[in-house]
Length: 332
Ligand code: 13P
Ligand code: SF4
Image (cartoon, rainbow, N blue to C red; front, side):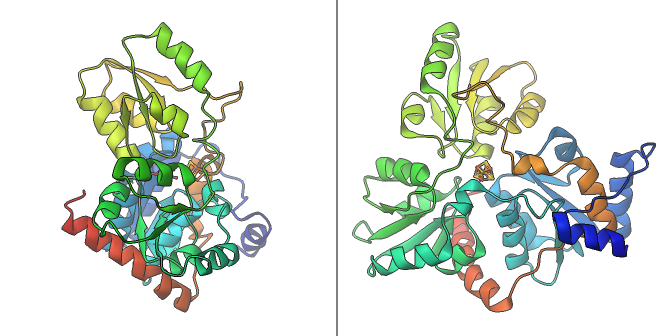
């Protein structure tokens, strides 16, 4: 165990040999019962992790599950800001994640000291931050939002209210277009959703005139402009399942295709092409988590996410505001 802890300090995850004869799915199920653990996973996790999770969801759904769970151990198969949100909402629970280095390019694009200065330049503005940000940014915000509720939360505020929207400029610009607002945008973006090639998408659409393009609002304006439907991961899933169309070009992280294929097995799903030949619409942060790391993380309850209490309390206020508003506005 000491060696494991030392390894953890070096690499941010447990780097131990696993007996290759172990059935990791069965072992994880056993650990869940033994430890009264709940396994929460984002749709962008690899298929094996999604299959063993107790709950799979988008950022809003995951936050709600983390808040209400009675489990003793929250195992968060997602990225760092998501596990942080779980700890902020449910501080008496132990929160672990398979790889502490699973960060987020969007969150990293908004360092709290720079954002604090930006905020000072707009003193009469309310700050709405997308949940894909660090606890430090949440603590500087008035309301948090996710891609599921951003538009409704902005619309719920008086038209004359001045707003800073951080950190995603693409989601912010999309909400500005949808609501006719002029929110001041922080210049951040997600490396996965910025990689799609409009040129290749246009050619793909020409080859599949029957297909609908569905896109996440973190994509750039040019891609969103040619999309047939725009929504959060949950909304994209529901649309692909419920719409009559049989073929979808999907402009978001590829992990979502696993649930889409399960929910709509007879439909054809084509991942939108990136602007180079690599698998760049796989999020490298989300994909740091593996079934092996998940097993070790549950077995040793490491790495654990901890947080300074004053930061937690400051970051909690705008998340609570989001959850209250979402309930009032009837957003699931
Ligand atoms: P949602 O699942 O909330 O749509 O967020 C997408 C995302 O980029 C998560 O990192
Ligand atoms: Fe961050 Fe983008 Fe990865 Fe989501 S998909 S975790 S926003 S880098």
